[in-house]
Length: 470
Image 1 (cartoon, rainbow, N blue to C red):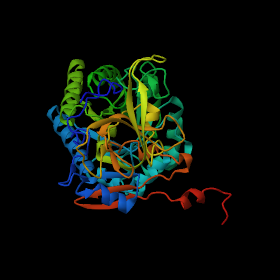
Image 2: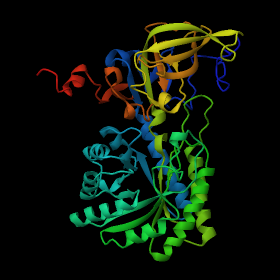
Image 3: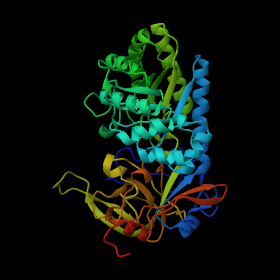
Image 4: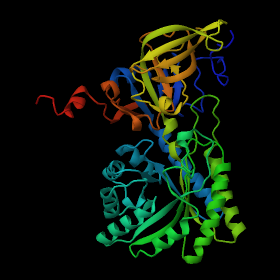
């Protein structure tokens, strides 16, 4: 059988449409002897029966193992070059009380980017000194609360925030540690909207403006300067961008040492993960080696001490851990021309498989043109592979969950399908569009499943409507 001409060039016809590529699926996902998808020993069918669909299924041991693995890799490699590393979990990717406890128990800190994320971390009992507060437009209330509880670092994103944070710290009688976010001008090779280090964008301040702002920070008795912060983007598969950003930051770091201590350097992160079988992200161990070598080399070149480093690995901890399960509703075979618009050439069939969720539980395909994978979850099949597009149920033509993958051609209504690598920015960016209820988040470990974020009910939706009769 040949591949479908409608398939993107990167998507190969699979030898086995039931296979679970290990770089895409969570570490404890497998097929049972009967061919059903199991995650940490819990079957897809039992998960759907107990919790309904859609449902986010988090492989708990996978999250914990990745968190520990990142910390150990960076501890080891920065000790090798005579320094240390501090790893921050990205709260914006996915944050719940349980997950906050998992990652801090693994030795990580947490980045929060709003008062709500801060509240979740505090509710989890996280030591505030292990939190960092980000954001380009932190409210006065958010700053005041962060300073009041004693967060370990606030990332200054603009000149006006220096006075705001200093004033809050003075009111609380504290000396607040701060970082200064630098827009290095380095752009990661990624989607336009994920690039967050260009000069024409909302985050950070320019290299040229940094010395005067650092001097202003140092003039505030209620502030202490930790160092520079850089973030060049997300879903990054290579280290060249980090190396160039580090080179630019090191020159500034060395200059600032002339006016006082600069104890650390935050290089950001945003490490990529595999969403499809052709994605090849660097192993965390290799990333840690490269980061340590970049930092040590930069310090040696300028003749300065190797600074302590903070990193923010982004989605790489939570992203691969989670699979979203859906139930198939309708299926349509659509005949599509394989030529240009208006041509009368050959046609091929694209199978539209519609499921009971969509852009309300995963907006990334619509927002970022993100690619995902899909597999049958309730069974295996020997039927020939068919090119499918997994569509959501929303009233939007752009409501696509998986643009292109192959499923067995006998996929049918009532089947369960699993979409892997949905741990980052799935639930976190979920909505109630078309008044769909946000799904539950279920953790699985050692053959057991439990809810860590309750799914919404219709009563939840109506409870916020002031017109509802009480």
